[in-house]
Amino acid sequence: MQVGSKEWMENFQEAVNTDQELNVIGKYCVTDLLLQIGAKEYIVQIKQGKLTNFFEKGALDGWSFAIRGSLEAWEKFTQQIPPPMFHELFAAVFQGNLQLEGNLKELYANLRYMIRFLDVTREVKNKLVKGV
Image 1: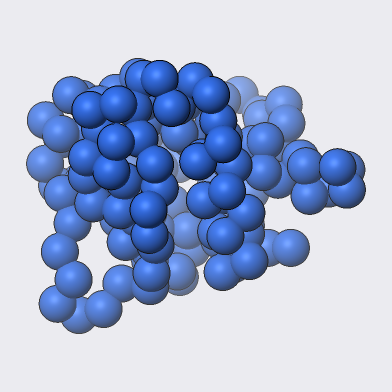
Image 2: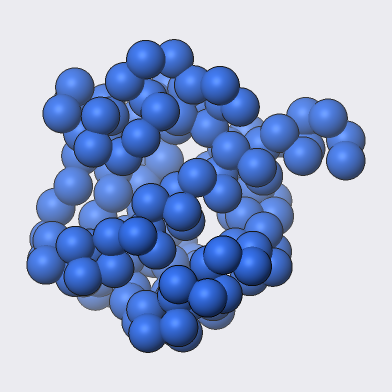
């Protein structure tokens, strides 16, 4: 299954919504963000720490902040043991592998949640690879 495919996003949604840590630290997290994985752009809606909805971005769809990256960058980022500079959001951003845009105050206000949210991408991929 390709990182960023609809099926992958559905599994990611389930993993986020069942993650105990995100349930606790996301209590006050409410945002609509743009998650770009290669050519795919998804609006991801988060309410009280739950990924309530995601859909492919349309021309008039709004978002608060964006996390963008090439398919290759996301494939590296989601490895169980990612290569250097793909292990964490800001390491990937500082090296130009991922990009942030938009209202970054909202990202920073929910930073602990967003760091764990992105860590869950590794769990999704590895569950699928291992067939667990």
